[in-house]
Amino acid sequence: MKYIILLILILFSCENFLPRDPEEPNNTETSFQRPDNPNIVVNNLLNSFTKKNTVNLLRCFQDDLNNSTFEFIPTQDVVSLNPNFFTNWDIKLEEYYLTTLFNSMDNGISPIITLSNRNLNINPRSAIFEADYYIKVQHNKSDDSEIEYEGKLIFNMVSTDDDYWYIQKWQDLNLDQSEFSTWTKLKFNFGK
Image 1 (tube, rainbow, N blue to C red):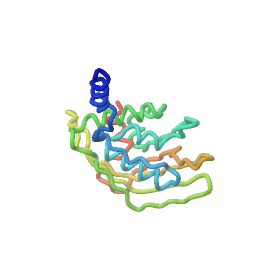
Image 2: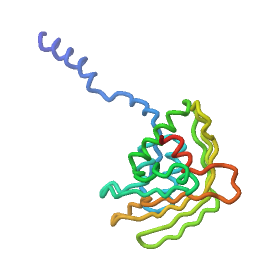
Image 3: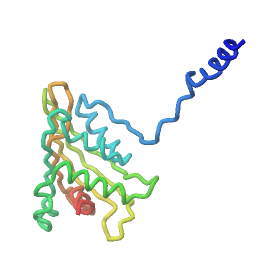
């Protein structure tokens, strides 16, 4: 009788070892795909920017294995007014500006970015991607920082031996007769 009671107790306690219902995933969306071609790098950048995902966005600018250097070439109009600001621009400063930008936007508000006039030239281990961009950021910054930006970007991309593509150099250019500031100005406004 003693053994039967003990067996019943053990069987009831085994309920803790049964599979449980899975938990809902947390709401940190990620749509980062393995960047095995230049188009995926661009899509990862756009998705990460609109989802305010700094970690994934920064992954577009570096080779995870080699931690190679990232170069940003700003527009000359912003550099002429702020000559030293972009002198040592690197991944850490890119992260700072992105964090500041995304934190200045209310929950539920995401930046808008569109690319047009896309052009991609691919070689076996390098690629050049060019596009005109338009960005709108609804921020709550108290100064008079712009909310709309427009320009032309040129990404020099390279790939590793494992076909992992990333942006090694980014050049920002003004568009002729644009009424908006460039991405360089966006980085300046939120990177100071």
